[in-house]
Each structure stands twice: as C-alpha cells, then as structure tokens.
Image (tube, rainbow, N blue to C red; front, top):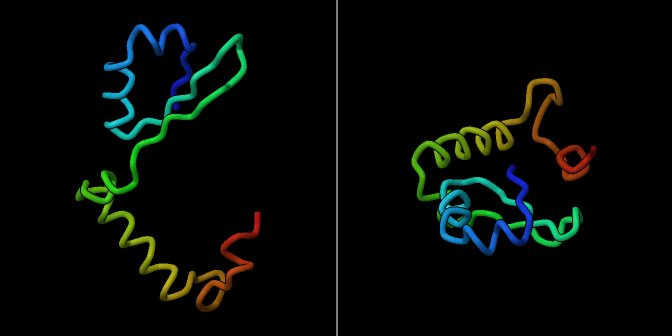
Length: 81
C-alpha cells in the first residue's frame, strides 16, 4: 500500500493510476491526513489468472471446511476478528 500527498498525486496522476491498475492500493493525504483510498477495480483482478486461481483455491477451502473448524465455516466464524 502506497501513501502519497495530494500534491504528488496531482503531479503524477498517470503514474499513480498505473500503480493502482497493477493491483496496489494508494492512500492520498492532505496535511498528513488520509483523505482518499484509491483501490484497484475487483473486476480487473478477476481477469488476472494468478489472482483467479488463488481466489478459487480459497473458496474451495471455505466450501469444504477448514480443518481446524471441523466443517464448513459459519458466518460468525468467517467474520470473527
């Protein structure tokens, strides 16, 4: 995750968006305070074969149940932090 000032963002818009397109999340700051997060479009990520394979593998684990949970994960187990 990158952090840039709004001035740097304005000066390097194209370069910053290229980084986002490559999958990086950029935090934009004004006077040291984060005012925006620029995140890659999830639709584009699913077009990436490596990302899609990792996503499918993770989803299969959830559907089949994680070993330490002893079965399919409930909503509470998936969202518990």
